[in-house]
Structure formats: structure tokens, C-alpha cells
Amino acid sequence: AKMCRRGIAADEAAGNSAKYMGIGAKGSAALKRFYGDRFTTTFEECAKVPWTFGAASIIAEKVIAANPSKMKVCSNKFRSLVAYETQAAQVVTLNEAMTMDRAEFSKAMDVYSFEPSIYEVWNDLHEFYYATVIHGLYLEGAVSEQSSRMAAMESASKNANEMLEKVSLVYNRARQAKITTELCEIISGASAV
Image (tube, rainbow, N blue to C red; front, side, top):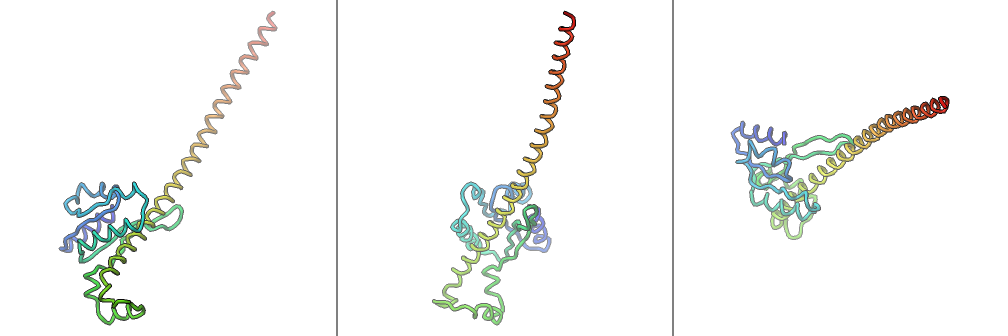
């Protein structure tokens, strides 16, 4: 949410209008207070069902319908089991691809052969591109989240075991003191008789 906030502020400071499309409830909740008027679509229920490429395709259709002139996707990038970093990936939009230098475009696309021609399938390919970017970044974020949860649970288990050891020690000392007191009472009662 922090990176989205910074990106919206930077775009608006440059004189551009910024719109927000979000996946998940946490990011939307964090941004809704100050940037709620910039929300176009949010997909807050995605976490409640298993993530599929079909869900990413539905989101890609919404992006195609919005027809952004510029697009950045913020997500968490997995680094290791204990670390991740937040990134803002620049995504080539349909408008940017159409205004791309033809020589550069043909150099990139001549590697592939298309049936039917590239110009007939270009819109479908771009929708597929959006879907793959969204799907990949969502999975990367899910891996980061699960690794963070795993590390937190490991830490919580370790803390619980340490607390259990301390409580067991206190309990054993109290039990031992009670046994010692009872033995002293039995011995002093026997010697009094």
C-alpha cells in the first residue's frame, strides 16, 4: 500500500491522473481512506477462493476495458524464506505497444511466427500478456506471504516451547517444595510421638 500511495502521489505531482485497481482486501483498505475516489475496480474476494489463471484472465479483461495509457503493478517479490521486497513493475500497455518504434517492435516480434498474422491476434496476445503478468506477480506475492507466515509460526512455536519450559520449571519447583514440606511435617510428627 505504501508503494501504491507513493506512486499515486508521484503521478499526480507530475500532472497525470492516477487510477487504482486492486487485488485483495488489505491494500484496498489501506488506500481507501485517502485515495478512495481513484478506485476503479477492486477484487477483494480473490483470497477466499483458490487462485487460478482464469481469475487472472478476468482481471486482465477489466484492465483491457479500462485501457490505461500507463500501468504499474505493485507486488511483493520473494527473496528468501525470511525476506521479500515490494516492487513496482512497469507493464507495457496496449497504447504504449502501439506507439512503440516499428523497428524495435519488429526486431522483438520477428523471432516468432504467428498464424494468423500478428496484427490479427495482437489484442488477444496483449490480454494474455496482462493475464500472465498478473498471475505471476500474484503467485510471487502468495509465496512471500506463505514464507512470512511460516517464519512467524516457527518463531511463535519456539516462543511457546520456551514459555512451556519456564512454566514447567516453576511447576516442578512448587511441587518439589510441597513434597519437601510434607516430608518435614511427617518427620516432625513422627519424632514428636
